[in-house]
Image (cartoon, rainbow, N blue to C red; front, side, top):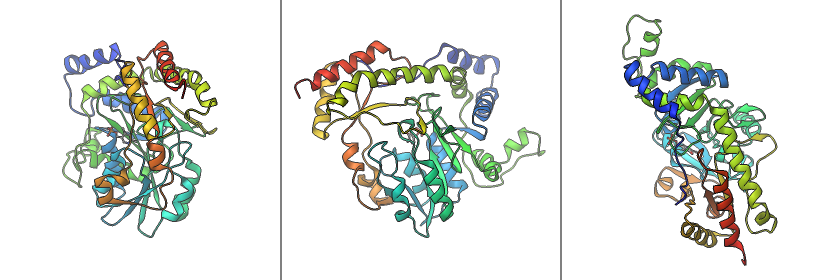
Amino acid sequence: MLAFNEPVYTQKGIGYISEAILKNKRLNGDGPFTRECTKWFEEKLNTKVLLTTSCTHALEMAALLLEIQPGDEVIMPSFTFVSTADAFALRGAKIKFIDIRKDTMNMDETLLIDAITERTKVIVPVHYAGVSCEMDKILQIANDYNISVVEDAAQGMMATYKGRDLGTIGDFGTYSFHETKNYTMGEGGLILINNQEYVKRAEIIREKGTNRTEFFRGEVDKYSWVDMGSSYLPSEMNAAYLLAQLEIAEEINQKRLRLWNCYDRELKSLKDAGKVELPYIPEECQHNAHMYYIKTKNLEERTELIQYMAEMGIKAVFHYVPLHSSAAGRRYGEFVGEDRYTTKESERLVRLPMFYALKEDEVVYVADKIRNFYAGR
Ligand SMILES: *Cc1c(COP(=O)(O)O)cnc(C)c1O
């Protein structure tokens, strides 16, 4: 069976994990490997970052830093992973789901103003498939209404909007290093703190509400409990595994883009024949080949295609069940406006195998089977 995903493997990553254990003899958070990862991101992104235990936790940190209170409202697309909503629901926020654009599957920025009330505190654009939301318009609106922006860039590392790295554009950005993402440490994430005034408190919240980070820098002579917080530091073993991938980040990105472009070429004839839709990348967006998906005619055709692919030894998958239609989504949030595309488009979407170790001839094989499926349809 051709897998849908395999976590990135590098030989060097194993070496670095051994080094953390045997040479450094230091496995808890914020050791040399975490510092190297942090330095790499800060040089690339030119903003303050902290490595976290997940993207979910990075989003939780953003919600804590923005002091989200019960009754506050947070606007996001319904077509996203649960964590986008969870992080704010945990603070008692009411989630306001808005519809997506059919072309990018991202939040429809033209629907924002109608969803804003006096209680709106945050807008959370989710950069689906590493393709940026329309950030200029979103920031403009956020500015006009004095609302914060947290970019869920879980899928967005190495992707840009008008040349700016995703995650660096809003007040906060978050990355995921879950094993299904382009760069992985098993479970892990990153918070990008683009507004300097939050940096000190972010360090404290991440370290169980203590000023231990300042203590380690020699800025205070003892550390103690100074604020509320939690434990959002990943282990050095995980950071070590990630660092090896950061060192070849561009190579990984280029390989993924080659695979993505290969799918796109191979499936173009089906698109031209009007049988399927392929991903759309707006002019101002450079994507990172996080995912390759196609859209079938409807849910029934998608179910048949996934079944056929399984018979051909290929694992193809779909996601997400729109949050507003899930049990928790109904409890913690509500859809604002009309669901024109969220449900309909999510039911048509199929994700194809896409991972670093995937081979170009495997992509050709997958595309060939999809063409076979559509022959005679
Ligand atoms: C993967 C993902 C997350 C969660 O990331 P974790 O690191 O697993 O917590 C959140 N939002 C989106 C859009 C994702 O794709």
